[in-house]
Image 1 (cartoon, rainbow, N blue to C red):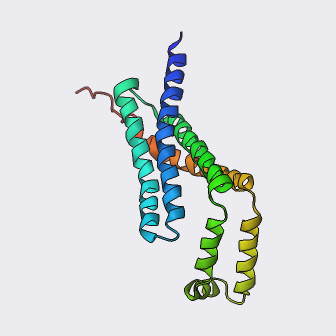
Image 2: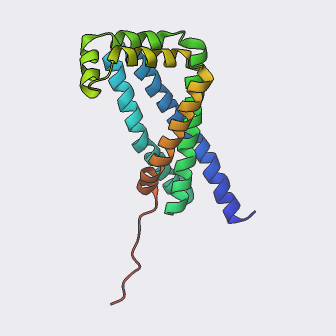
Image 3: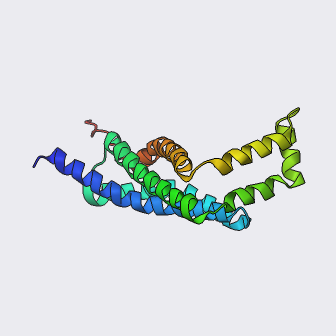
Length: 187
């Protein structure tokens, strides 16, 4: 077996494993954010977990570099980071589909309805969209959201999760790649 095939197999195997853990973090972040619509502290915790996933992914890839690969050029680091985060995106999208299809039962739309019915939300929307009929816009948005199927929501989440994974792969790869070493200078 060639070295390239071995490197590719290692990259795929470790990316899948790391993607599982990052996917668990993203799923926890999503769950806490949804729960946080009624409990703001949980929403903040969900945001922190989501933001922490980037340095956690970089830490995992650096561990792969140091313990398994020896060196991790930028191209391979980006490929591994992208595959890791894409796996996390797929896991999170599956969890989001399960939530909307079987667990939500309209709870999210009820929470949004309550939030948007508050005078502060109405005033904020009026400032953001001057001259618009806020009540009609809010009713239309809530109706659209309420009639969107779990599969349609999951497809939209898959798109955004994949886009997020693609964007975050570069900073993760830059943090995980092997450091640049200057060749020894001769006197």
